[in-house]
Image 1 (spheres, protein in one colour):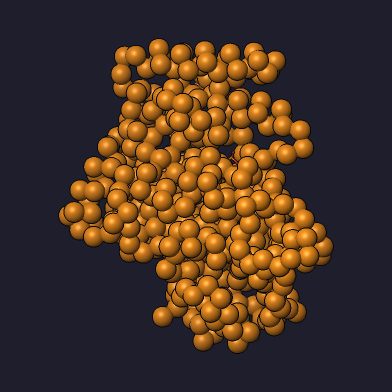
Image 2: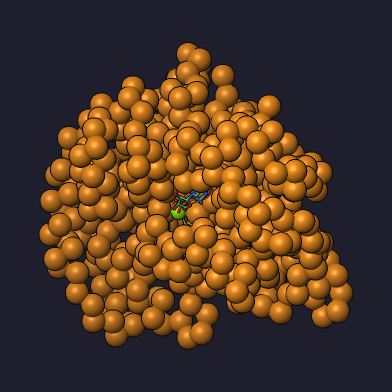
Length: 421
Ligand code: GDP
Ligand code: IMO
Ligand code: MG
């Protein structure tokens, strides 16, 4: 048995939460492998919308095991609140949520460090979600982090205080005078709350599950272009969002990776700073934002919007070994006379068709234009119901990428999903 993977191919918010929820009936276990509460994964069913940050998106299905893997960074306050919200709508977290002992904790001082680092940047701010993600992963690499399994040992407070003292020295250097005493109190209360849940060595649990033929879907957070190694550095997050992150974030070998579902929107969005070659600053950009309700699930910030970037998409497919594509938010394109797709970048008068070393602001996209469609597709249930222009657009994407499109999403609800045979 192999572990399937679903991950984002753009700058995040591709609709991972919705599609993981749609695919969950096919699997017994859903496992998050990286990221933390910088993620906001939205699910909609029965006219209710749920936003998850740390909990895998399979949680609203009974009897499915949801694992927070070792590669995830956990803010106990945010996780506690998520658990309480999910329990209100009937999810059984006590039974179905398993947390890796090796998942790392985001400390209150990590959130403050995030703020201090961002404030200290002049005009190249990353636009971090300020959830403490970067500083938490930094401490993991620096080998001074605390893991959630540590909370069950007597020296937990000593470890906490030692890392906090290190952070205080950094604050002094920055002259940063923030205060997080309130958050610290909530944080320790949340730690007590979380002790009641199930803790596992997720690498052993997952490998045993594969050996005994249980089906697993690994859920990514963020997107490939935010990957710490391969994204538009330094405007990235601090984890490997690509399929390699599954091996380190869950403890499975590369041999055990099965299908790789790559998910992308039919256009592009980005929140925060950094280059975005196909970004639109005109009415078309605003139409995409309005029709797609492009406001951040975690921070509420308006998302920057633009046309699909085929150069970046091909790069993302290569990095992840994507063998099944999922295209979301296709309904948002309804109404456009024509739809543009960037197939090259013009830099200093030269056209390239690969993702460059440095993604600068002066990249000019080279577009191909395809006919749009005017009909409302949000109630379509199968390919044959869709306008011919959209079916041609999907064919075009398959030819360009060399990968079959397996699912189309035509609205935010679970049921607004078309499976392509
Ligand atoms: P994630 O981070 O990848 O899980 O994506 P987000 O939840 O942050 O953002 C995706 C947004 O688009 C959410 O508000 C979803 O409810 C919504 N959404 C997902 N798929 C579709 C779709 O096919 N059409 C429309 N109109 N909205 C969608
Ligand atoms: P999901 O899983 C979109 C962006 C932030 C910022 C950069 C670094 O919902 O797709 P960080 O908080 O990690 O220091 O922020 O990455 N970012 C996301 N953008 N979706 C996300 O997650 C994101 N998580 C982080 O906006 O530009
Ligand atoms: Mg999101």
